[in-house]
Length: 510
Image (cartoon, rainbow, N blue to C red):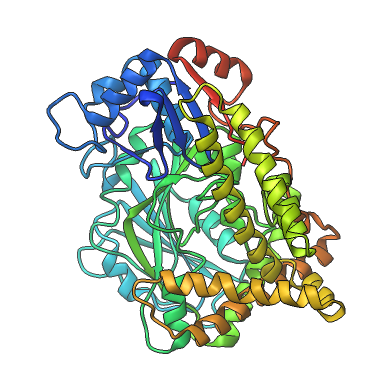
């Protein structure tokens, strides 16, 4: 699958990736993968990641000519889809400029005069007044792009408002921008180059909470659900970046029309649903944290808890639309057994299961220089990460179960106390610098989890489903991980790729 336009011509290796066996094996990405390269594939990877034009960097590479060959372009596609390589956008490159962008702003009773001054020289701005109690008045700044105001008589939610704006877009690209964000001057400069790849349907920047006084504002700057971190990636369910918010989202107009726009039936989670539908249709959605916008957090604790409850309530309707994508935790069944035995008072049995997985994993890694050492490292990290995931799920989605168990069992009380205390305190220690004392951080973190989990249960009751409560324990070391479908995701393309580029895909099983 070769892009029709010149894709971003530099790549950065993901920080999780390790090269083993003389560079013939890559271990990393999201989800974790083991990739075996042929000699020609390893040489192509070296060329991509070291450059051939005298570049000194070992993590950024040129030139675009490298991706013109069919086999190498397939290698780039596979590695970027797997989260092993990330395209590095360069301002000014690609087929589009700001003159190809229409900005759509859904508004409900919010003053957007300041936002209009930040948008810059785009082709058009469409403001959709979503049933504000007092009709919105828009005063476009002098010299700005033309502004069209669309009024809706009744509030239908941001997704429906965005669709009303999308129906009026005539440019090849559309940027959805929420009314409560602040944009930097160059917000489009590093987003537009990604559309040089014709498979990219949408790109989203990093969203940080606006700093402010008070414990709640400081907590939000440290742990906002809209902040997906500093590492770029392809957006796909079950990966490190499983969704992006539509607080700021730039997309191909034609791709959104093809996908049917936002789902009007979803009041919350409509942006997650759109991204997953684009991915299922074969498009690529990317996350670009090099661009940072600011989003106003909820001003009161009551509004903040209602927001978290509403986010949780979207899990059940999303699960109905995307079966299997909303499991509260995904982990190896071996990890679940090891931690289950430890929680039940049999830590020796849990250690035995962990040791067994190391042996099973070493068999899968045979052919490496040090299979047992790598297996021990992967299994150990996998079990530790699984324990953290289980603790988060106990306090977030499963807390009603855990609370009942804690009332009935002293051992369950100990497990719940550890789940409540240890992960948040570890998070707090990792904050640089901590913006809150540990007591208030812990209290807000618990309230955050309880509100979200209550929303999940309320949504499940309304939808009459338990899908968002059921864990996914399908990733056992002796089974292949289900490969996500997407561009080139069918078995015939995988087979063709192995023959042409020498890449064999396997999962470590953790």
